[in-house]
Image (cartoon, rainbow, N blue to C red; front, side):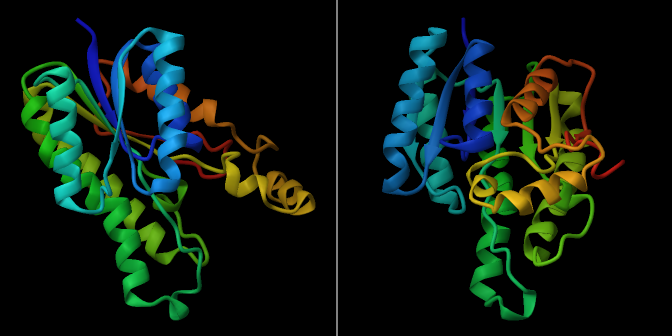
Length: 246
């Protein structure tokens, strides 16, 4: 019987690459999208995954910063695929990229809620369907959770919190056969970086020891490794080209 995975924030960029990796690995997949503008992207992605890998996939509109929407996503997954969840990929995230003095409280609260509290909601709801089997939770952190980044105080705080959550859950649920790990991407080529001035992008790449910006496939590859590494838990894997050393 096929395994089941839920991935949040899976319609574009790193999330899309990870969703495709889940399909490649044979998982049936539930993917959320938040806004109506993302609906078609997500529906196109699930059709692509179904056709390419022969698995089932569903798209569920849910704002994972809200507990009720997280429950809606989990309930839809259980209804479609049954009451066993094999992998939860907590990937949804946003950023303000703003001087902290200029941020309004509602701005940084939104980042904390989306980037950290959503992962607590989703883990809380999924764990009853994951315990006492060989299952895996993977959370997207960031190099921003390993070191400070200018104009990213709220983002760094959230991502550092993600790492703390991962380590605590890993210890708590290892006896119940749930592995919990994090991926902390470095500079990865997504739509945000594609819009940067080319000279600025080259300057950014020059600050990375490997001399290049990473690809979304680097993160998807890390996900594939984690899901198939039965002795790995409580760890932070950071594909970042040497930009941050642990």
